[in-house]
Length: 355
Image 1 (spheres, rainbow, N blue to C red):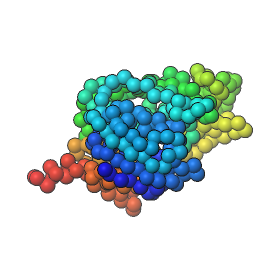
Image 2: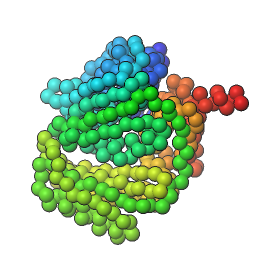
Image 3: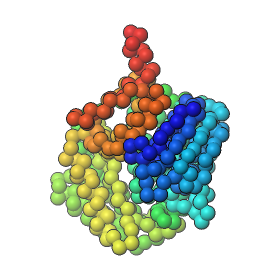
Image 4: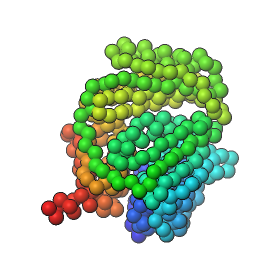
């Protein structure tokens, strides 16, 4: 059994998710201690417990410690990952419901399902656009296109928007199985082609998305960036608002989100997202800070090496590299000076040594 200290590095839920993905893929039994020790409320929250249950379902795992607030988990897969039709609802993990994000559940099971024999369809219910996690817009427009370059064919459709604290969102994920992963080389992003965006509300007046879109458009044009931002009113079970900006460069995509809340003007929501985009645009790296750690796992499982330049070396990135190292899957070198990540999978290194 591989024993992982969940307090390592940033001490958050990413340690858990990466461990669950790798346990399902490799069949290795794991024990995670000190789960989310670096968070104000340590232990499993609703989205983490749902991730555990989802990972267990796809590989018929035996699990101990799978309850809210648990800081220890044992996870023992009993079969290879099984492709199929699944449904997971974050609100079922806690009495009274939860707006826990579905995107972290999605990222836990996507890679195991992509490597399974056969195609899969997954219905996910809960929060789709929640703070401190990738929004479903980011997953659809940045994460999935990035891993598509590495050989993973998957798509996600937003059925209903779900915001904190009510949740109630729904998404449908399709994953093609039998994937063969390849490495990625991405050191230069090339010129910016366009900024596209969505300013969205549910159960709120139409002037709010219009104000978000107008403010974002003005800020970006003031900085000589071409933008096309659409205001939308969409379906959702409760009021909510947010903006998502996609920066399309010649060689890469980057995404930036901001979510509304009571007391925060629509214009300020737009300003937050624009500031993140402009900060990224000032740099030369093709990979934004969030994608940097999210593509590390497929890179470690690829048949060839990867090398990519990141906008920022975060503790999420270094923590994820440490977790992957515990499974012995790849050598990961992080060049702090040039902000370049080099991933040499064990299989690729074996071939290099044999030649």
